Image (tube, rainbow, N blue to C red):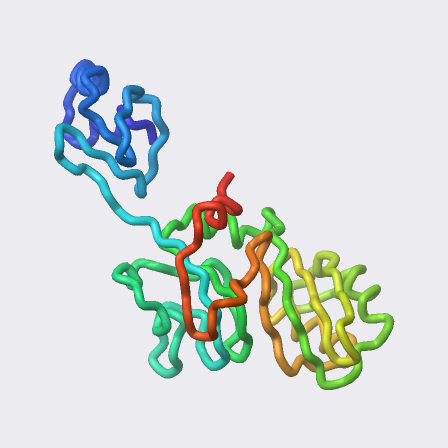
Length: 231
């Protein structure tokens, strides 16, 4: 939305009055004087006019190191959820930007900014997700080529996008996906006759799980990290 339209909606009843306030430097946007009514704003833009705060909703962007045993959900009557791990005054407003299975661990992003989370999770954005995988049986030499070609999922009647598999050991690998199908990693390994024992997400796009962040703890994202997923 444009700033001038926001001001009119908030009770400044004419474009002339909006222009006067802007020219007299009575409009403060994100703590700085704003003189253009064409300025683009959103619901997290702080706006003050003549000393009165008209909008000051805080945007929340968090990185969580998810431990096993927690659901990727905002609430559940039986199991603890990742929200139970969050200590933030706006925790009731946040949602997940991508999920992990209850048994899986690693990087989870949370926010109250729906447009930002959509850029993380929207399939057409093809944001890469990187996982460390441990399997029951040795990973065959053909697995990487099979994953790169895509695997047909009959239930959805689709073939997965090409995935990159890097062997780290006989039963360990780093897998990079560019989509997020239901239980996708487990289903892909099942398709080649193997079973996933543990799954840890270490990266989403260019954002890597903070090595200093212990399981169960979260921290706010830095501005540069937030900007990874802004247009």
